[in-house]
Length: 364
Image 1 (cartoon, rainbow, N blue to C red):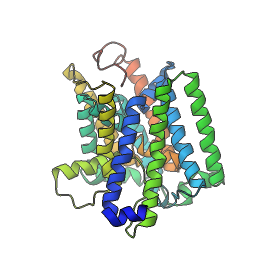
Image 2 (tube, rainbow, N blue to C red):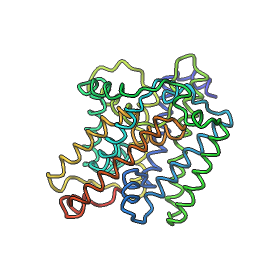
Image 3 (tube, rainbow, N blue to C red):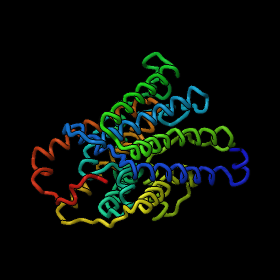
Image 4 (tube, rainbow, N blue to C red):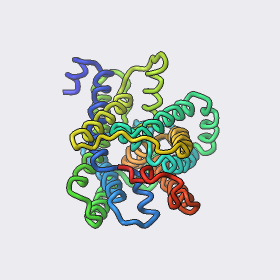
């Protein structure tokens, strides 16, 4: 079937269509499940019982179990993906993850959550998302690129087995499946203990399954096409920078899966919010919070490009294939976010009303 579609519309258009489709599904389910790493971290650090940590853990575990199942069934081979085959940076993953974690606390959402919220009418998220894209592009090819390159060069690891958690543990696909299923059981247990509603539970499953769906789709196209196709899944830092350049300057890169993700997620989140009556224009109630959002978006944009991906790109997509640098980045995001959240609470930014009550409302 993939071969027929390639002959019919071409590899580039098929990848673009796949990116839009997978992104649409993820956006709709992420909007309905309230999938958000920032909210999960704050619930965990503050020891506040709730559903956001449970939703994030369950969606993450579904993604990992799905990817590892696809690998052992022969539907997917990630050995040639950029997160495994290319040279990686442990220093970039660690430092970038820390910066991203701090940034998502300041901006009140990771890059993915900002895109989803933008689709529902949140103008604060839209502004932060645009700043994120500018910072990501600057870190990739602009003013901040030399700094990113310098930090990345501090600790470099060659591609291949050195970037695989399973290889470092001396295991193979069966161990990967066991780890994935263990995570799935743990995620489900936390979700049930937290009494996540059935609707959110199903939406979390949908958001998690979008990750293996993206991996399987791009791998299938790479096997059927004569063109060179990157095996990848959902990520937002690189595509956001590329989409920015597509709109403001001549663009000579072929449209592909990554670029299709962005409009797909936006349309999916918008559609879900429209059907459930959750569209609502929201802006800044006061100007003094704008610097916080802008600073957070800048840190996230630079941190994501340094770490090799955002909270979904590195944290979930990369984490699901057990890439060493992805797990390093994810741990850095958690640590950075917990430290930043502690600082905001400790020095009164969250507790004493320095941010308006509407802006302190949970990211919904």
